[in-house]
Structures are given as structure tokens and as C-alpha cells.
Image (cartoon, rainbow, N blue to C red; front, top):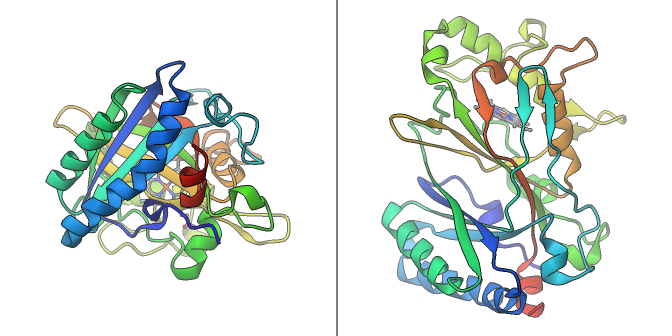
Length: 306
Ligand code: HEM
């Protein structure tokens, strides 16, 4: 049975390191070889620093997949759904490879990240790196708890992983979307708490969901809580974390899912809004500066396709 890369389903950590690469043309065989070595190397570090709860995954850019692995591609693989409406945007900034390293220790992430960069030194050029961190009791920098309605237990696998019956060659893999959001912190902090709560649709300090009759159409959780035609919830697993310096800060948003559609539907609901054009008001305070789509194949796929 195919097994997922452990970092896809991992529970929240204290620290993360996101590495985004462009591939050197002509080095595909080398990259495939090193991808097969990636998890054995991570496992060695997991043994050595077992208390750090280290986990990782590697995901291949939707545009780069066929260059690396040929026409044998996940059934629903497609480019990032670039969007724009009035002042709201979701730009597409493609990358060839995304490596996600997480643990409770910033030094362990640094050590592992350095080794990863050495491993791929001749084949991948690092174009962006971001360090994520847990903020207070699992809050986004807006001050709201983030991740409350994420799927738990067996549901987590069901939401995050491709099912064998759906696409047998790519079972236990995930479609991954990333967006680095930059918050306008001053503007947000000047907004009264009650208005912030209306924008999210939850209370700030004790993280209570608004009752439906109080939830505005522009509330973030109203715009992202979607149902299909049969009334079933459309879900993603969010692995986002805050990042930043004193100058630039925001959320490194990550969606992990068995299909690319749920993320696209939610993003469209946020940007384009409902049938009356009511969009997600959170987007008046934060803006994505990057956006890319990837597929993170199973451990067996990485081991065999060299
Ligand atoms: C819920 C923050 C972007 C999808 C939430 C919650 C917060 C939050 C505070 C409520 C607590 C929770 O259930 O986690 C943010 C911030 C974002 C952002 C600060 C960007 C800067 C996105 C994007 C998507 C998304 C881009 C999808 C395209 C969701 C979903 C929920 C949620 C599905 C749960 C809704 C529910 O069923 O209650 N987000 N989010 N978020 N967010 Fe976001």
C-alpha cells in the first residue's frame, strides 16, 4: 500500500522552513535520484533529533512535473488558478520544487535545510526561503486562532490524500497549493476588535464561532465553508504558519488536498465572492504575493521513479 510523505499530515509544530527552487535544465535524472534519497536522509535526522518532531515533504511544481517524470502525471494536475477581481488578486509565481521542513527546533530545521540544499546543489537553485513559526497559542498574526476547523483523525487522511480508487498510480499523494500572504498589520491593528471578529466570523480571544444568523456574507469562514451539490462539506487540510520580520509579515498559506478543486473553489469564493459579489473582507487587509501549485507523491513513487 502506498504511504504518504509524513510531513503532509503532521500535526502543528513550533517552527517551519519553506524552500522553493527552480530546476537546472538537463539535470532531471540527478533530481529524481536525489528525490529517492530525500526521505531516508530525513529519517536519519528524525532518529538523531527524535524529540524535535521533525517531518518533511517534497512537492513537484505542476508545470515542471512532466519535464521531470514524463507524461505519467496525477489525473487532476493543473496550474495554479491565477485570479483577479477589482483590488483582489491571486498571482501565479511558479516554482519547480517545494520542500517543506517542520519541527519544534529552529536549529534542526536549519541543519536539515542546509543538507537538503547541499544534496540538490547541482540541480536545484533556491529562489525563495521563508521561516514559519507558531505564534502564541496557534494564532495567525491577525491575532485569531488559525486551524480550528482543520480535519482531525481519519478525516485528515481522507481530505488530504488521493484515494486509490480515484487515481491508483498516485494514491497517498496530495495536491499542494501555497500562497505567501503579506498582512497590512497597521491597518488591521487600527480596526476595532468587533469589526475584526465580524471579518473572520469568530471571536478573537476565546475563538468561538459566530452563530449563523450573526455571520456576515463577507466573513472569512462564511466564504470558505463550502458545500457541494449533495450538501457535503468541501474541505482542505491547512498547514499554514505565520512568518515575518519587523518590516514584512503575514501568513504562509498551505493547502493539502486529494484534489486541486476545493482550494480553487474557496479562493474564488474569497476573491470573486457570492452571487451578489460579496467577497472576503479579510482580503482588504492582506494580499498574496506568491502562488503556486504542486503535487507531493507517495514515498513509494519517490523511491521507484529514479
Ligand atoms: C478558517 C485565517 C486564507 C480557507 C480560518 C480561520 C482563520 C483563518 C483565523 C478561523 C479558524 C479556523 O477554522 O482555522 C486565514 C488567514 C488567511 C487565510 C489570515 C490569509 C492571510 C485562507 C485561504 C483559504 C482559507 C486562502 C482557502 C483558499 C479556510 C477554511 C477555513 C478557514 C476552509 C475553515 C472554515 C470553516 O469551516 O469554519 N482562516 N485564512 N483560508 N480558512 Fe482561512
